[in-house]
Image 1 (cartoon, rainbow, N blue to C red):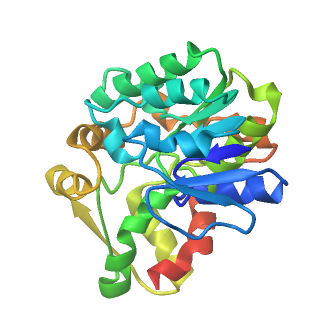
Image 2 (image 1 turned 135 degrees about the vertical axis):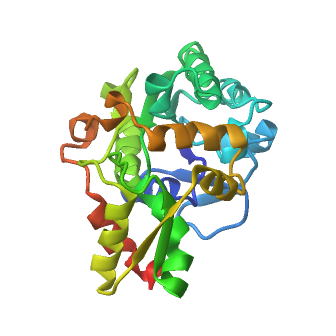
Length: 279
């Protein structure tokens, strides 16, 4: 059995579906009751309380570990989840980490994530680490303003990074959970092209077939919006990257294609599949 945390999110949902379609027994974990694919077991647990995960790990051979925003806070102890997995008989953990662990190693949340990666390496378990850059699905934050005002509001409108489709992350995660060849792998996951927020707004407009205006936020405005959902440290680390990406953060990584045998999908593909939420 494979346990997927964050199973109702942008990565966890397609990962759960892919594993179920591959004939795997899957336990989907989320904080709240939710619909899951047929044949998938669902367990409600809060990773901030690692022992709540114990029932989900019973009989599990592998775990996909995705941390919610509050588990990036300085006082969080996500390494306890790795220890619990090992004690429960899990043999393999695939961790969704962050590109910033390598590209911005001194950011507060990156230091904590590096410590979690190190705990996983030292756990005695088989492991793989995924380090994605920016997510295409962050554009969901614009859905309401696009629907109601025809506006995308974001900071640093003309500064781009190669955002990745979460469905591509899910495919890489599935491969790492199922194939021993990926044991000990550290994969940097990016999209196929650098794209700015203004260009993303243009892609949304093209998919809608109607104009979308771009409004540039200040850094303070953006941080105020972000801290409704994530710790201030994570907001600052993220804003540091998207305001002035360094060469490593602009690099198009070959790792998606290395793992799943095809190039990552562009932002326009993600928009086309999700355009209903912007209408």
